[in-house]
Length: 538
Image (cartoon, rainbow, N blue to C red; front, side):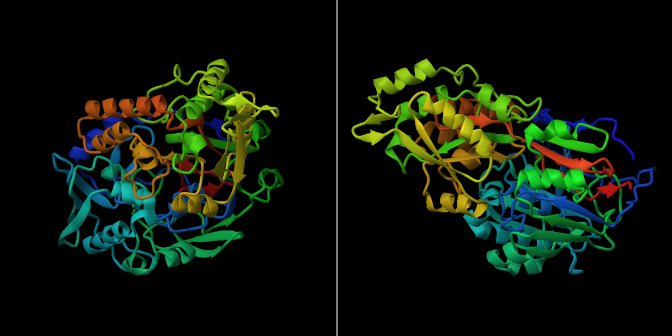
């Protein structure tokens, strides 16, 4: 067997703010700079089995926010630009050149002229326009895309390979968004399909793989397309993908996924439980690890749904009564940092709020006492006949919530846990029927805060009342001045903590396991996976 020189690959460092943002007003060119690697990158097997942890629910990468679905969709769609996961630099991909005007309201692109979709139609400026027009029209149905395209007015087509994307106000996050699978490009036929059709049957992309089948709660299968020859320059090789088929069986039980990796039934598995990492620390396996950027896993309030959640004293008590170090020790990934802000420590612009978030159960109890919440006979506090109880809706990380539940019970707070599936979770967001959500949001740009906390967001998660925060989040998305923008991002984190608009719990790390025969597995800048270079050595 061929063994990797590093058995546990970690990528925990933050992207450089200057590298990411200064390029927004700069020009980049060069086209396809990929050079074929000197080594033999052929695969010993044509089919790989990659066990995933949940039903993707929607396999359209432009609409979904679910990590599992995005991981698969990345293999099917390409993007205008790419982002170097080490430096944060925005580099060419389908666009050979790109330039923003000074106030970030228009972005000029030059396309490659040799790209086709899997239905054999050509990528042209008109197709890009159709993508952005259709995505903007989806509104909250494509919640991440709506943030990247905030203020979108139109796309002006000059000719088949030159176009300009226009916004009514500065949009500092668009270019980075253009590197994601959320703004990945699909064929014109897919832009004309309904949102439901795209979710269930997939989209037609220009990527190295195509959707072969999706059977809900069973599996997804993608197959390599012949003639693919326009990867990002960040990839290892050119030409077709190195395996012909990747099967994604849906295996929801952690033990079944890890057992299947050990038995050889699966080549790769999604989300190795952190507690099981040591089982795979041997020459027979490879562990791939990367910290999520963006908003960490935590409790996101809806103050309109419950008087308990609306009580500022209760939310502040939850902040002080939650021991994030213990949560990290019991449920976190090896080497990961404890959550200490509304951004993860690997995100550009992160500023620790550790002092304000320090575990202090005595202070938490004092807050509740002063607010009139008295301890009842069962140990749970009450006020005016109402129990200090609320429900947290989540679709993953139950172990994290159970530790927090036990911690809060010690100070008289009854936190109930409602574990649902992804459909139930996003359905709750759409209806507003929740006390707290438990989740995080992965994005390489600190504008992730706006997606979760802005009340103007197309599909807002937090339902809060914080005019100062709203103003800061809106302004930061318009600034091309890196320092000024990072000052506002710091202010936003401070305001979120001061007002207990979010209770951070855990910094999530993507941890996937594979047989040591697997090579070419890579993470992108947002901790999502690239399988174009993946292959088996035996």
